[in-house]
Image (cartoon, rainbow, N blue to C red; front, side, top):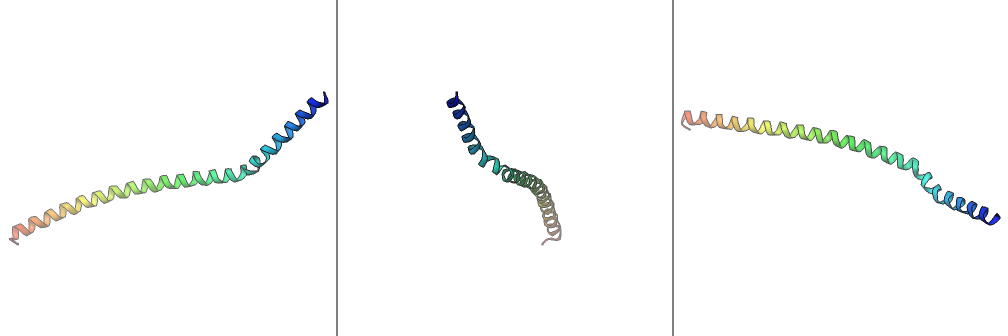
Length: 80
């Protein structure tokens, strides 16, 4: 009976010693996870801003092309 009890207690001590470093790291892991979530949110907002800028750039490029065509038409009318 004492041997079984000693084996169980020994197993619990080994388990506690194995779990202790993991439990000690949990606060740091939580902070790291929160930091990663914050960065993911920032990356998403930057992606959205980049998409908006891309759309604006495309619109400006179209407007520039139209303006160039108009300048070419004006020059053609003047005979330049």
